[in-house]
Image 1 (cartoon, one colour):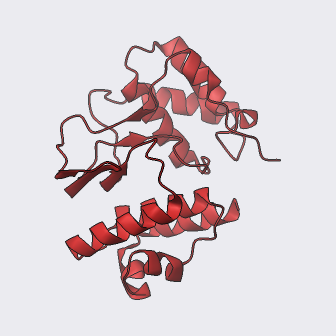
Image 2 (image 1 turned 60 degrees about the vertical axis):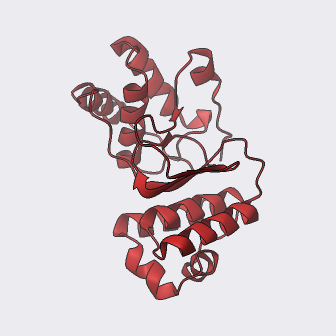
Image 3 (image 1 turned 120 degrees about the horizontal axis):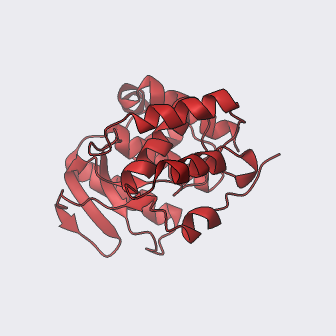
Length: 206
């Protein structure tokens, strides 16, 4: 059974789960958002798409980012946050972690350097949250900006994958190539094994 994501717990506790780049300056600013020619790793947008957490690795990364963005959270509050996210009924995750896994995540994240930004995907295009754009309009902008840079990156592909998933559309190599105005071979060449696995996981949720 699939559950709808419930953000009330985070909102009531003023937990930050999205943050725009704070040091990297955009190359160009548009009504719809910002463009970073060299990309930025500083954009954290947890729970922006309908995609849920499907792996232990992804779960651990999400919790690392949440504590990094909320350094004021104490260990007891963090433990409560982890348990909330790990409850399948709250709609964040597709599996039920054991108590041992939950305790392992709490310990591992607590040992990390919260002054160091968690690893993050490179982003070139960041749309405003309430831009009002349709998915097709976003795809058109992505295609135009990628055309200008004359290169397709993994971040371009990942953004298109999430937008397709949000529209409950099956993600295919050919579909991605059409959006990004490139050949299927280019998509294959720029997709890491991790991204290919993410594609399969997203398609299973449709």
